[in-house]
Image (tube, rainbow, N blue to C red; front, side, top):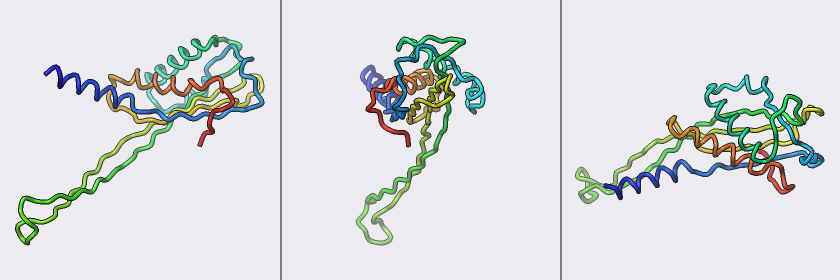
Length: 179
C-alpha cells in the first residue's frame, strides 16, 4: 500500500511540476542596474479578471521574488509592476483501433475503433516592468503552462509561474523574445 501511495505521490508531483515555458523581451537601451525600488501598477491589476485571492497570490509571489533580487517596494518607485493573464483551452482527440476477441469475419468481430476526447487549460501570465519616470515598458516576461483545477496546489503553481518568469530578470542580454 505504501508503495502505491509513493508512486501516486511522485506522479502527482511530476504532473504538478509540468514545465512552464518562459520567454522575455526587454529594451536593450535600459540599464536595469539603476532600478532599486518598485511598486505595483494598481489600475492594471484592478482590471484583471481573476479572483482577488489569485491576484494576491501572484502579487505576493512577485514581491518575494523581487525582494530576493534586492529590490524594495516604495511609494516613489523606479519601476512599476503590472500583470495580465489569459487562458486557452486545448482539445485533444485520440483515435485508436483494437482487435476484438474474434477473427475479423462479419458479424463476429474485426477491427474496432474508439475515440476519446480530452481537454486541458493553459494559463498565460505576463509580468510587465514599466519605467516609472519614462512611463515606458522596459521588460516583459511571459509564462505558459497547464492550470490546475484543484485549489490545493494553486499557491505552489502560481509561485512556480512567477519564479520561472522572474528568473530571467534582470535580463542578461540573451533572453528570447515574446510571441
